[in-house]
Length: 300
Image 1 (cartoon, rainbow, N blue to C red):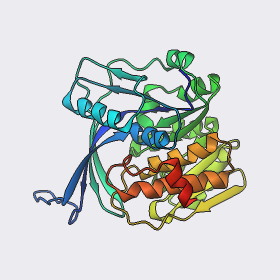
Image 2 (image 1 turned 30 degrees about the vertical axis):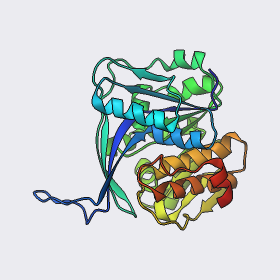
Image 3 (image 1 turned 135 degrees about the vertical axis):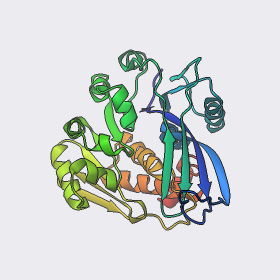
Image 4 (image 1 turned 180 degrees about the horizontal axis):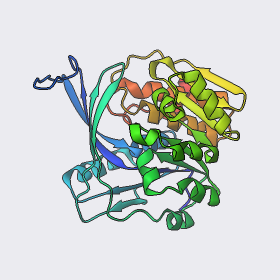
């Protein structure tokens, strides 16, 4: 099957708690005003791309457990192609509890790796695409040579890391940057990878390590900055009423990649990403409020 973009990374059942009075303390309890069950992980990027009209293939795994069944039902509701999702006969519970505030959020995640890793080389031999988007260090750990495999298959490659303090500081990750076409971390992730608390210095170091690529630093309500060689593009966050910021960075990725595969300039890629990321915060659940192409065009 032919796709525009392949999205590779684990799926999670997101339990998103909103309208919270504050963060809980040990031995105490807080009550949320609302709670949403949503599909998380790589599905957020895939769903946002799908809403823009992109032919997207989602490379992931689901088990026999109730949480996996919930995720399947949510993927059906979103209309996502599930051809590349492996189904296992054993439980594979992967869940994230998100404590979400309008300005930011905190997560508790449980991840279980499948018993057998994906044979990505075989998958790419039978399913073509223009671009591969890698969601998180967990996918990198499963297939360390994913960038080379995708390039050999004729695809460009992007990476959005997610947070893991140990993984972000590994020298092998910095070595990989030179191979990437697009690196899409948050500000704190980029600073951790580059070993500095200065965001501008982190951007400059990453740009030097990626002489042929693009680094995009997402900074929440402060917008985002991209560097490609000496070209710098910056966008300010949309003025919207944020409800839940879960998955906003993933939706930003989707908008950026939509413009990228359509050969738009870097500045336009940033505008598309900014609109998708901003609108995604207006409802609980990262994939729920991602805009359609017509909705995004109104903001453009």
